[in-house]
Length: 269
Image (cartoon, rainbow, N blue to C red; front, side, top):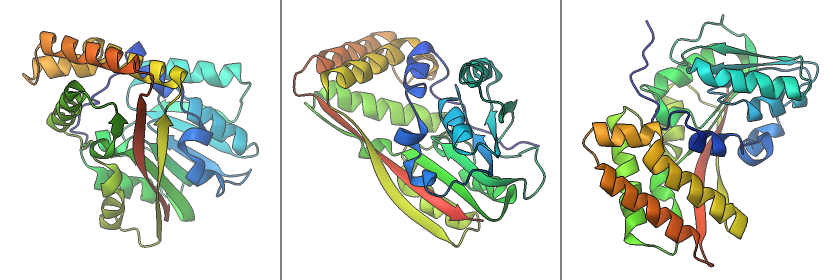
């Protein structure tokens, strides 16, 4: 039976997809790109709206990419992205990373971006990713580390946002500070040849700050995260509204800056 015990904290509200569709292989999987070859078979776990998946498909033109997602609804958007880009070497399926419905050694590369922070058992998930990866292949994972996020200016309300998000994510069964734990999880999953690294997203231009602050302002009051925060007794709607407005006010500051640290691993199967 699948071992998924976590609830995806963000859900797929428009404010969430606003950030997911910004992601590309270049800005979210650069650590992997040098290892790709044109004829590789790739599994993209937690593919969401498919923008990274489509990029990977373009980079393996003689190979194939399968995008896997636990939430079936968002796959229509992923399929539309593939159609719009004229890709015929990509397909999408619903599945659970804890129990992948593929034979052993099915893929050359198994990739997961911002997935392990949301699953119930990241070690089991990594072990399954290893199982379906052919010997000598690569399991590539990248996750943010919320406790390592940093920003300026530093209004107290954004400190409350971070504490609240981490509390809600853990109540949902996830681990928001996943980036620093990836290496430990991979070792527990049986990997011995691991290249660990870190990279950042940095939002500093007026356009980037407006985008980032706006999507978090909306997410704080309108997404699944907001619903769970209230239903779980972690915050009231009034408190969420205050945090949302603090995001908007922060985004209006001319010297606003935000950094997101991401842990990364390339694991040889």
